[in-house]
Amino acid sequence: MSTDDDRISVQGAGTGAGTTGSLVLDDVTVSRGAGPVISHVSLTLRPGEVTALVGPNGAGKTSLIESVSAMTAHSGGSILLDGQSIDKLSRVARAKRGIVHIEQGRAVFPSLTVRENLALTAKSEQEARAALDHFPELEKRWDSPTGLLSGGEQQMVVLARAFAARPRFLLIDEMSLGLAPVVFTRLLPIVSTIAASGVGVLLVEQFTGLALGLAGEALVVSGGRVTYQGDAVRLREQPEILHEAYLGQRAA
Image (cartoon, rainbow, N blue to C red; front, side):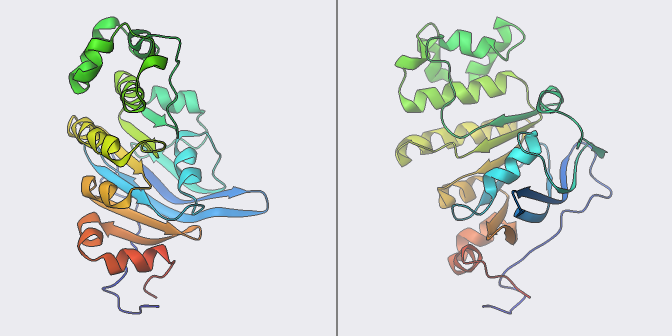
């Protein structure tokens, strides 16, 4: 295990100044059954920034992201929006405040058209069509049943529906699940464009290299704890650090 402080970086997010407009996880722990699944995570999500959350299967990534949207209760720490605790808010209440969660898989309504899927979250058809600015490929599919679309197109519908909800923070869990890498690669610029519009994005992803290429900050979790937190570029350029973090190693 490396003991060089320059090898693995783990930093707290902090909850002091600068949290206005941010979504903050302050020492969050999520437990299932008798023990914690992931422990003591501190992270600040900011508008317009992409943060990648990566790590081996079973590390607690999904449990953590579910705690942010209130799909799963956290057992320790606090979650704050604009400096105020949202710990007691339901998933619906958090969504109304702009925290939108895209779950694993392509959760479309296959019998509904693309237009009807987007109408579930958009306040008007005008807003639904405005979402298509980021998804021009869906224009020709506007009145097609979503079940007839390809896997990549269905994932575009999921993203478009989330964007039509006008999120402040978008939590994306394994967007690539079931998609070929070449298809997933086509979706990444869309996520980048959404972030550039001012949306803060937390991206949980199995294709680590692609996720790190999109993100400014990265967290690696392994064995239920954060083993790296810091610059995503550093992980891309120094794969040995990523390897050690995946193995659960970090600086003392």
